[in-house]
Image 1 (cartoon, rainbow, N blue to C red):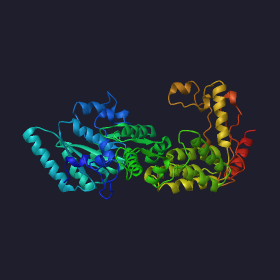
Image 2 (image 1 turned 30 degrees about the horizontal axis):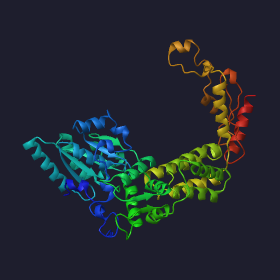
Image 3 (image 1 turned 120 degrees about the horizontal axis):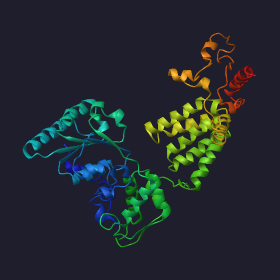
Image 4 (image 1 turned 90 degrees about the vertical axis):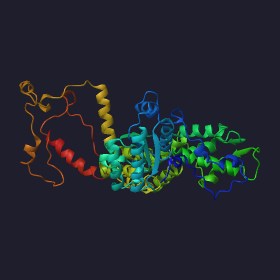
Length: 468
């Protein structure tokens, strides 16, 4: 069974020859990512919503009243790091297991040891299970009664939604704390700290790095501090290969590209390239060009753009530029968003490509966009008249006495008595005015001739004509 030391273990790859590297004196002991792992709560970046002074989780850790919890967050967000900090600060016995290698027998041994420790020394036991989502139902059930009775305090770490991956009974006995992915600013702070830190980082070496190279590492890491530090370390080793420890090492964008085996595309997610490229995608789709749409999508994805940002824009496009001409466009885009959440990249890139091609080839209409824009303008510029009495709700006798709902015509009573000329559409029927008196007759939605809107237009003309 893994012991507590495995929590602080090294991922050093013995196959990498570091004999001639300028970092050989320290990298042979631990990789940079392990050395730079935060040791205190104040060193943990990006989780201020959980660990800022006064927050419940921080108080629990500082007061050594650790509840059973599930730490849920993307890779590299600091789940294991937070567990390590808790291990340092708690007076409880801390044991770590990996769900990849541990079985029910390992769990039972931890529980038995915890029971004995509590009996003889009154010391609590905290059991940290990394990747708890990999435990099957039987393994999770084996943990449940001991957590419930307080024999062990459970800390589970997972990258998967615990609502789906952790048994409901076990989940109900823990608190879920959601860790956020690190931003590029956080990654840049971590990288610069590693370059400057003389004790744990690379500060004792004569390393310089171009700003565009540093930025590209932050983009490539995609919120994972471990990935960023691994790339930086490999870049330093590659830049100083065959040189002595005091020889300057300069890291360029080309060095970083070589380490990542990934070309750094000209793209800045925070500046003009970001907005120019999403604009190009939007306009290509509006112009019904699936080839250009796919190209600009690829430019963004391959440069490290957040796929959720892209799919948010696609969802907006589905309503703004396709709208009721093809209502299915919105369904396709929302499905793409779910695919991004469910499988992530690179698997979800085809779901995004499918949405882009669908939008490009769909019939176009901005009638919905123009209709709602007109509504917004009227809401802001006209007086806010009360709801007409006849279409107000009247749940009490007093409201009925005040004529709430009086003379309201219940449309279904009329539909069933009318002849339906088009089976796909209800009959043209305008029984009453539903807008306030000051806006009577106002028209917002004017469908076009593309796709499904052609039939909507025909039906609306019949309906509106019935009231004239």
